[in-house]
Image (cartoon, rainbow, N blue to C red; front, side, top):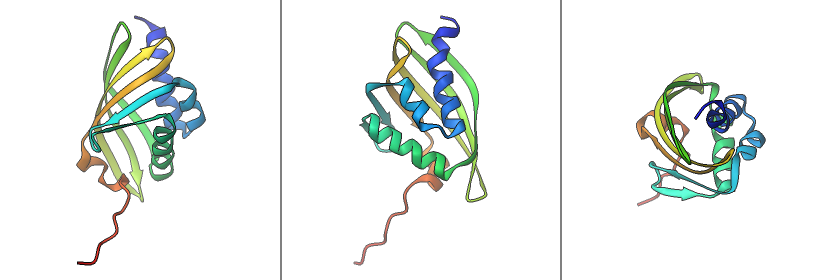
Length: 130
């Protein structure tokens, strides 16, 4: 597993870093499912792209510090730290992702992120009257 196995992952993270969600869509299979540990649910392609649009609008100076990446037939895993700023405050979020791949397309993502580290990215909840 050489450079070709890294291509879809490198393309994904470069596109997010650049804020190019159309380029993210190019590496996602039409039927991609993206599961997040924070919500404990999977979202489809359009929902995932919407989440990423929110991410790139909210986080400035995005960069990925890749700690580890391993491949196997039909998949890969990556551990990284997402760095950036949110409203001027630093963001540092450890993440582990398991990918399923079909050729040069990502078909499934299981993302594990420290929920406390990304609290600033979560939509603000309205207080409810008692």
